[in-house]
Length: 266
Length: 67
Image (cartoon, rainbow over all chains, first blue to last red; front, top):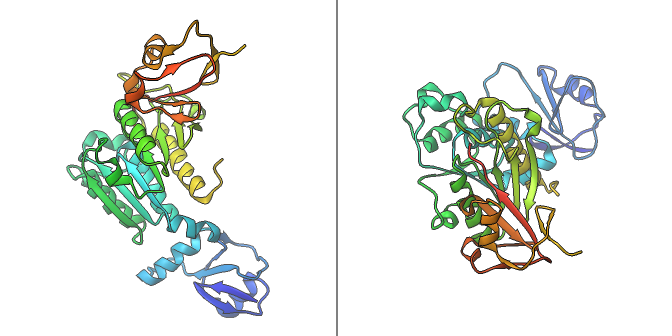
C-alpha cells in the first residue's frame, strides 16, 4: 500500500497508524492522519497522508513547511495554497481575516490599507503595543510571517479608489471588503462588481456593539457578493466596535473565502 | 398581479419610475448601496437612466459602517 509519510511517498505493509508508529516512529508523540491529530489507533488506506512529530522540538524551516501542510486537510490544502485573496482594509475585520487566512494556508494574500496602528485600534484589531506607529500593511505582514512563513504577501500602502481597484485586486480569486466607512464599502464593491467580473466579493456589514452574536450571518445578497454581518448594527457613538463581534464577523468572512475556494459555497 | 420586487418584498408602482427617484422615495442613500436589477449589476452612473416598472426585481444592498 502506498501512503505519504512525513511528506514522502512510501510503500508500507503496516495496516494501522499505531503499528507504523511503534515500528518506525516510536520516539515521536504527535500523529496527524489526513490533517487530523489522532490519539487512538486508525486503519491506514491507500494515499493516506500521515505525519509523525515530536513535541517541544523547534523544527527547521523544511520540517516546519512539511508539518504545516500535514496539519491541513489534504483535499483542502492544494486549493487554498493555489489561491490569491485580497483584503481591502486592515482594521478590525481585515487584520483578523488576514491572520485566519494565513493560518488556513492561503498561498497569496494581497493586503491594502493607508493607515498606521494607533493605541485605539488594540481593542479589536490584530495588532500589539509594539506595532503602534507602524503602517498596518507592514505590521500585518510581520504578524503573518510569524504565523506562516511560507505565505506570499503583496502589500499596498495606499488609499483604494475606483481607479486603482483593478491594479491592486485584479488578479485575486476572492476579495474581502473590510473597510470602516459605508461609503468606502459601497465604492469598492461597485467597482469590483463593474470592473472585475470574475472576482467573488465578501463584504462585512453590521458588527457593531455587543448585540446578539447569532444575528451575524453570511448571505449571498447579489450575484458574486456575499455579505457577512447583521446588516443593521453600525458603529456609532455609544455603540463602538468591540473585539468579539468584529472577530465573529471576520470569522464568517474568512470561512466564506475558504468555502468559495473549495467550491462548497452555493 | 405583477408588482415590483425590492429585496423580495412586493412594491406596487402606480407608474414606472426612474431608479434614482425610487431610491429617494425609499430612503436609500445612493452612495451607500449596490444594486442588482433582474440579475444584473446597475452601475452607479446609470441610476439616473434606468426606469423601473412593475415587472422588475431589484436587490438593494445597503452597507452600514464599522469594520
